[in-house]
Image (tube, rainbow, N blue to C red; front, side, top):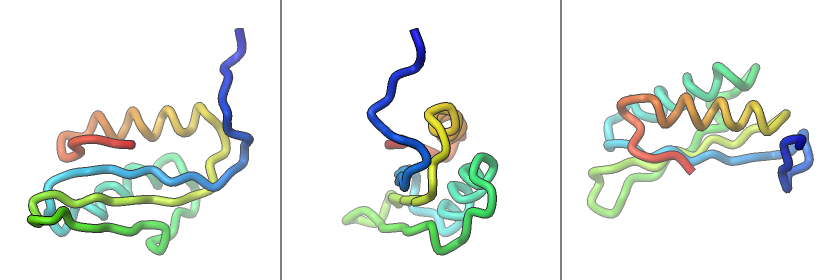
Length: 87
Protein backbone atom coordinates (compact mmCIF):
# COMPACT_ATOMS: atom_id res chain seq x y z
CA UNK A 1 0.00 0.00 0.00
CA UNK A 2 1.56 3.36 -0.99
CA UNK A 3 2.09 6.07 1.61
CA UNK A 4 -1.07 8.11 1.90
CA UNK A 5 -1.19 11.74 2.92
CA UNK A 6 -3.75 14.50 2.82
CA UNK A 7 -1.13 16.95 1.62
CA UNK A 8 -0.37 17.68 -2.01
CA UNK A 9 3.31 18.34 -2.60
CA UNK A 10 4.97 20.71 -3.01
CA UNK A 11 3.15 22.80 -0.38
CA UNK A 12 3.79 25.43 2.26
CA UNK A 13 4.25 23.75 5.63
CA UNK A 14 5.02 24.92 9.16
CA UNK A 15 6.75 22.85 11.80
CA UNK A 16 6.84 23.96 15.41
CA UNK A 17 9.49 22.85 17.91
CA UNK A 18 9.45 23.52 21.64
CA UNK A 19 12.50 23.74 23.87
CA UNK A 20 13.94 25.58 26.83
CA UNK A 21 13.99 29.32 26.24
CA UNK A 22 17.70 29.62 25.50
CA UNK A 23 18.69 32.21 22.92
CA UNK A 24 20.38 29.68 20.66
CA UNK A 25 17.33 27.40 20.38
CA UNK A 26 15.98 29.05 17.17
CA UNK A 27 19.41 28.55 15.58
CA UNK A 28 19.40 24.87 16.55
CA UNK A 29 15.94 24.32 15.05
CA UNK A 30 16.90 26.21 11.88
CA UNK A 31 20.06 24.15 11.43
CA UNK A 32 18.16 20.87 11.83
CA UNK A 33 15.44 21.82 9.33
CA UNK A 34 18.01 23.32 6.94
CA UNK A 35 19.56 19.85 6.61
CA UNK A 36 16.40 18.75 4.78
CA UNK A 37 15.28 22.04 3.14
CA UNK A 38 17.76 23.52 0.70
CA UNK A 39 18.11 27.30 0.87
CA UNK A 40 16.09 27.74 4.08
CA UNK A 41 16.27 31.41 5.03
CA UNK A 42 16.52 32.90 8.52
CA UNK A 43 13.26 34.74 7.78
CA UNK A 44 11.48 31.36 7.68
CA UNK A 45 11.97 31.06 11.45
CA UNK A 46 9.74 32.71 14.05
CA UNK A 47 9.96 32.24 17.79
CA UNK A 48 7.76 33.03 20.74
CA UNK A 49 8.49 32.57 24.45
CA UNK A 50 6.05 30.84 26.79
CA UNK A 51 4.10 32.97 29.24
CA UNK A 52 6.72 32.58 31.98
CA UNK A 53 9.65 32.53 29.55
CA UNK A 54 10.91 29.06 30.45
CA UNK A 55 10.17 27.61 26.99
CA UNK A 56 10.47 28.85 23.45
CA UNK A 57 8.24 27.83 20.54
CA UNK A 58 10.05 28.02 17.21
CA UNK A 59 8.03 27.81 13.98
CA UNK A 60 9.74 27.15 10.65
CA UNK A 61 7.73 27.66 7.46
CA UNK A 62 9.02 26.25 4.18
CA UNK A 63 7.99 24.55 0.95
CA UNK A 64 7.72 20.84 1.69
CA UNK A 65 8.52 18.50 -1.19
CA UNK A 66 7.33 15.14 0.18
CA UNK A 67 5.96 13.24 3.17
CA UNK A 68 9.33 11.51 3.40
CA UNK A 69 11.03 14.90 3.85
CA UNK A 70 8.58 15.86 6.62
CA UNK A 71 9.05 12.54 8.40
CA UNK A 72 12.83 13.00 8.33
CA UNK A 73 12.55 16.52 9.76
CA UNK A 74 10.28 15.36 12.59
CA UNK A 75 12.62 12.46 13.40
CA UNK A 76 15.66 14.75 13.48
CA UNK A 77 13.92 17.35 15.64
CA UNK A 78 12.56 14.88 18.19
CA UNK A 79 15.93 13.10 18.38
CA UNK A 80 17.72 16.30 19.43
CA UNK A 81 18.27 16.57 23.17
CA UNK A 82 17.20 20.23 23.30
CA UNK A 83 13.82 19.68 21.59
CA UNK A 84 11.07 18.88 24.07
CA UNK A 85 8.35 18.40 21.44
CA UNK A 86 7.75 18.94 17.72
CA UNK A 87 4.38 19.49 16.02
